[in-house]
Length: 347
Image 1 (tube, rainbow, N blue to C red):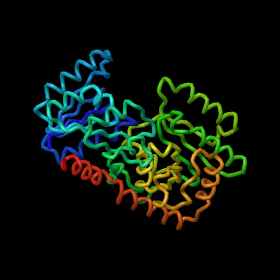
Image 2: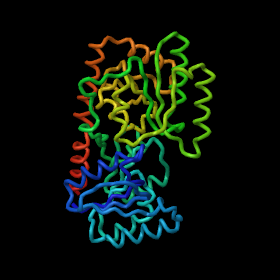
Image 3: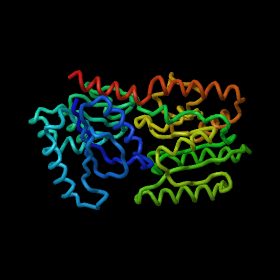
C-alpha cells in the first residue's frame, strides 16, 4: 500500500502528539511508501520510505499559505499514494475529498471525540470507512465506522525495572490542561480526601493552551483555597516518551475525560503497571469495577481513590498485572497497525 497520512503535528518530542511518531513508524513497516502531510513538524526519525511535508505552522505561515501548500502537496504527490488517512482532521477531507474522489483515491478518517456536527457528517460522505476507538465517539454512529485498538507502544510503556519503586499513595493526572479533561473534578475529589484525613500526594502534569491559561490559574487557586498546596503540585507537560518514568513512579493514574474521548493515557498507564481510575464507560465489563467511578462525580472518585490507596501490596500487584495484560492484548500498537491496514486494504 502507498499511503498518505494527514495529521496535525509530527514531532516525537511533543507532550501531546509525540505518540504519533511511533504510529508512523509502525505503519511504515507494512507500507510500500508513506507520505505524511502535517500542519507543523518538529523532530522525527523515519525510514527512507516515509516523506514528510509541513504546511508551515512552525514557520508561522498564514492560513492562505497553509491552504496553498496543502493543495500543492496532495497534487504533487498524487502518484505516491493510493489511499488517504486523515488523522483527527475532518477539515482536510472537506477541502480535498472531491479531488481525491476524482483521482480514485480511497479516503479514510480517524476521528475519536464525543463532539461532532454537520461538517463531520459531510466529511463522512467522502470516506469509505471511519475509524475510532470509543463506542461513545460522535463518529461511532456511522455504519461505515470500524472500532479500533487505541494503539499503545507496550514495549516502551512497561512496568518499572527491578529496583525501582512507586511512591505510596501518590496520584497522577497527565493531560493537557483543558476543561474537557476535567482536572477540576480531581481537585474537588482531593479536597474530599484531605477533609477525611487521608494521606496522599498528587501530581498534575500538562500544559494549557493560551485560551486555557485562565482555567489553569483557577485550578491553582482552588488548590490553595482548599489548603492542598503541600499535597498537590503542578508540573509542565513533557515529551510523550518521557512520561514512562512518570507513570512508573505513581501508584494511581486518574482519567476524567468523557467516554467519547477514550484517552490513550489510560492505556499507557495500564501498560506501565500503574492502577488506573477512570469513568470511561467503554471499560465497563473490561476491567475491575472497583476502578470505575461515576462520570462527573468527585465524591465517588474520592471514595475509589481511598479504596485503591488502602489495597494490600499483593492485591495491588494482581490488579496491576491484569491491567497490563489487558492493554497488551487489546490495545497495543501492532494490533492497531494490523487492524488499520487490514481495513484499508480490504476495499
